[in-house]
Image: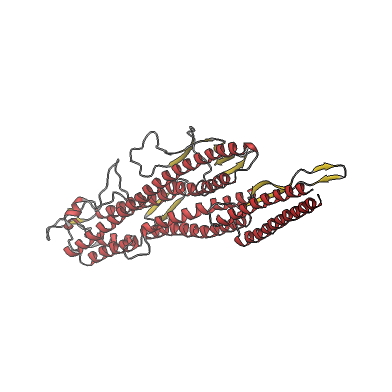
Amino acid sequence: MSSGLLSIARTALLTHQSALQTISQNIANAETPGYSRQEAVLAANTPVRMSYGNVGTGVHIDTIIRKRDLLLDDSYRSASTLAGSAELRRDLMGQVEGVFGEPSDAGMASALDAFWGAWSNLSATPNSLSARAVVQQRGRQTAQLFNEYDTQLTQQRNATLERLQNTVNSINAVAAQVAELNTRIVTSESNGNTSNDLRDLRDMKLDELSKIAGTKVIPQANGSMSVQIGNSTLVQGDTARPLSLKLEVPNPMPATPLTDVNVRIQLGTSSDRLAPLDGELKSMVDVLNVDIPNARSRLDAMAAQFATAVNAIHITGFTFSGNTVPGTTAGNFFNVGSATNPVSAATLKLDSAILNDPFKIAASGNANGPTDNSVAQGLAGLRITDNTVTWTSSTGATETGSFLSFFRSMVTRIGVDSAAATDNATVYRSLADQADARRQSVSGVSTDEELVNMMRVQQSYQAATKMIKVADDMMQTLLSLV
């Protein structure tokens, strides 16, 4: 009997020692990112069948489980996808909004007001060289502001395109790591044990994928995880299909060079566009394919129609050399561009004659009236002329307005989109944090709880040592009888 007691006590000591080691592991990794709390599951040893019944033989650790809830993981990843998409869109739209910097004394609204004001001043003194110089300066400043907006949009596009390419590379790298971990986990668990640390590492990679790519995870019977992106499979077992970034260059190419060529994401060897996109990937593609092109297209329409409207009035005027009459027919105020290089926000500039000689600026609409100011008044009146700008979107929707109202409407739209993205980011981040808190309540380590478990297991360990002493006392009693 004493040998049976010693055997049971021995298994108890070893088992509770291992349980204490598991608790120590939890405490040591309480602040380790991605670590899931582990628990030693105890089970009774197989009993010995005797004539009077079954006699227990001790205890052992059946398995060490990882405290994880797949439903909570899915909930967190779904929320993280929305938060990642909204937060990046907030940042990107904030940068697009920052291109225009309105309201500002140095913005387009102020420049247009100064341009019309310069024409109004010229109408008051139509023979003034200094007034013409101011018109020339204001026109050049307005054109340069259009140019600067276009340059900043291009810089924003290039930076976002580079970030998108880096994100695609990151997705491919993480997907390959998930495929490798699938292989290691399946191999490691072939003996029936659970590879907790490898599963923790894989879950961290899956969390990362959900944020940047909006992936869905499907557990497999052999312990591997399949990963879907859009409606396609990104990872299956030990195989990961790479993403690629392509430009949708039109064929045939248009005569006018394209600044904003749409991008698409492809998976594996497929040439089809991957859809639907989600996470940070979606935000970048949307900004590249929709937001920046729409902003630039509105600016281009405004610049082209601004040049056309000013030129249409200016060429009806006359310039004079001193008081010599009749005057000379005025030319264009802004450069008219060409078929392959039309007027746009990027190319708007003063006509070379106006740039080189402010006397080429017409104020009079009368060939025999050097002091006439009808052209200058007509140009000043463009400030309040309605429907001078018309823009049609790719969907056929039309926007019209005066130059100033059209620009303010454009900036307001971008501001509203930016504000909506900020609100969405706040809401979705809160939901993601709540989902993570629920997940951590199951898988996270509470040091207070682990200390309580440690004291409980320690008491069991001490009880096992007392069993050994009792068995030893019984053996000594038997020996003393011999």
